[in-house]
Amino acid sequence: MIKLSSDNHRSRINLLLYFFGIVFVILVIRIFGLQIVQGRFYRKLAEKNIIKIVLLPQNRGEFVDRNGFVLAGNIPDYILEIYPYLIKNREEIIHLLSEISHIPEKEIREKLKNAKSFYRPVVLKRHLTVSEIANIVENITDLPGVSVERKPLRDYRYGTITSHLIGYTGEITESELKERPELKEGDIIGKSGLEKMHDVFLRGSPGIDYIEVNAKGREIGLIKEMKSIEPEPGAEVRLTIDINLQKMADSLFTEYTSGSVVAINPQDGSVLVLYCKPGFDPNILVKGISFEGLRKMVFRDGSSFWNRATMSIYPPGSIFKIVVAAIALEDGVIIANTRMNSCSGSLRIGNRIFNCWKRHGIIKTHKAIVQSCNVFFYQVGMKLGFSNLEKGVKRLRFFEKTDIDLPEEKCGFFPDKEWYKKKFDISDPTRGMVANLSIGQGEVLVTPLEVCSFFSGIANEGYIMTPHLVKQIQDISGNILYKPEMNRRKISLSEKTINFLRKAMLGVVNESGGTGVLSRIKDIKVAGKTGTTENPHGEDHAWFVAFAPYDKPEICIVVMVENAGHGGNIAAPIAREIIKKALEHHGEKKQTFLNPNDEKTPIPTYKKQYFNNELEEIVQKIIKF
Image (cartoon, rainbow, N blue to C red; front, side, top):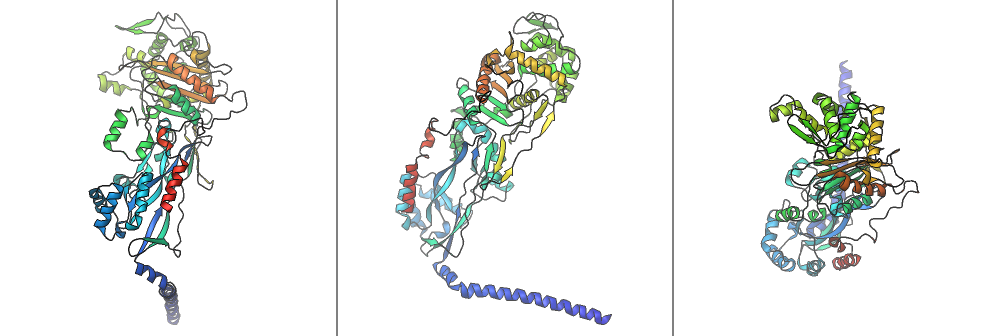
């Protein structure tokens, strides 16, 4: 037994010696290669002193609409950089560079002093003009360590029209670097919207060039023995948005200062339109902007970074009558033939008078929705009672986030008893408060997106598809990296109730006395509901929600115009035009969409300089020369 153990021990020692022997041989071969085979090469580099590692910037992934039209791409930008470790006669270089570039010497010194790395380039100036490039290149031999680099700059083709859904990009901040340690100073990341949501897919990865530089800091050329790495562009994000509809929404809001439009395909949840006004011009932000410039942009130019479609909450007005009717029908409080006390234009509740917009007389539930009778729904709400109304909205999940694929979304608000206790020190809301809630006024608040999502479910016969803006994300080779899950949920309503509500909404648009008649479209059945909400700060807010075609809806749309007037007069015609455009193929061959990038669509003035091919050719010739 002892002999056996001794042999086993000797075998292990031998195995260990073999292992170290192999490692030793590998090291000798590697050292031989470096010292003898490649010794001359590395000696040469040592003599000439420096390898310059240049990061090759990658193009950020493009955003395209559902038809493939580019919404956000990249344009060339020229940047003045300096490598601190390549500067030999610092003061002479700084003085000459300041004369040529018109950058104060103090500013150049400050930037070099604050450089985080001695070996990384320091950006001195972005967005160089042709004349600036020519001046620098003309003197480049006297400016070792200085270079002009061509880098991509984000270009938002439609500016304010798509600003809230796409968002914008900017240079990473110190606080963001702490959250994302895999990135480095100077990296460009998404700051809001889909740019932020899908930044990982959009970023791509930079390439590398190894350049030999002589003792005077001047470039000799690429080092052939060190293989360059090609940059990898970011992935393409294809959206469900139709830019033609988005542009139409913008054109229809010319007369109005603020509001939003949301349109969804009820069958799959794809968002066709998500438009807000006022918007902001992301092209200004990507070039860098001072605090004073930002203040001017927001307050003087009427810009807004607030996404009214997903983040603003408003009283829903009469469109909420559909929700109240649904709860009352499900609870058996009313039926289709229910008649309430006659509407004489108002209703006394306690010591207060609650008005209607006209005298409706005695009408049934269907007509009460079609003609939007306040008095009828005051009575329905009080008969239903606050507890049942509260339970009903929770059951319908009306005041929940939709889970749209945007980083910014708020949910609406419906008060509970605890809220009334804290706010008014009462255990239950009064009958008047309940009456007010029942017509979508008072404390009830919703987002336009919430409204559109819920009514898409009504249009889709009870099933709400999760709204989404991204159709798919694919890399440069065509590999699909991401597709949204097609999630749906059933609205807690019976088929009978949903059918009744659909028919009532059809009547709103198509029956005599309907409040939505201005949304009628020849040969297309449109169903809808108007809403007008009181605004203590000015004119009423105008609402309209609709879906079409009635039998198999392809679009559900919500139009919300702030401080504009009545929903039937203001919002309904806007919805009509967008529905007509979206359903141009109805009953015909599918439409051929106008290419929004063609010559009929004028390019905004601030972009014309970048789309000039002659300019790009001149710049390239200057740099090459």
